[in-house]
Amino acid sequence: QVQLVESGGGSVQAGGSLRLACAASGPTSRTYCIHWFRQAPGKEHERVASINRAGFTAVYADSVKGRFAISQDNAKNTVYLQMDSLKPEDTAMYYCVAGPSCDRTDYWGQGTQVTVSS
Image (cartoon, rainbow, N blue to C red; front, side):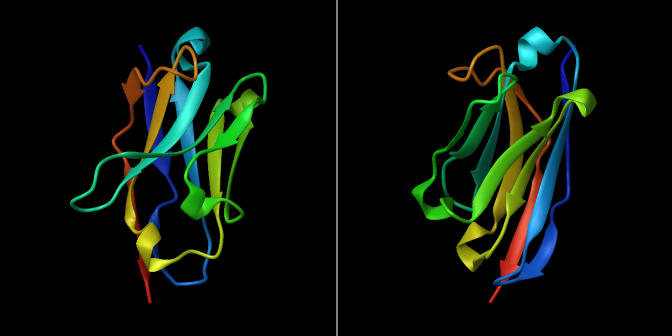
């Protein structure tokens, strides 16, 4: 059974930083690729970044390129999202999502709230 547990969210002022963590458990074949998605109030889910166990990374949201970075510690089965230079528009619920490949989003965590104040 796959479980994804996010941590690290919170409230921060604009310009600040947060690091989200996603601890994954269960068969590694099912969590080969891990994504970070976010959903702001009234908006659809947006894929922010992805990483697979081979180290392939991608940042998808143009609005966060150059500010957010995804990384992993395979020994700890944990994926991180380092968020720097945060802006109020980054305010959202951030979800850790996993799948057996990076075109899959089979498993979702409960989410962690990030609030950025101006």
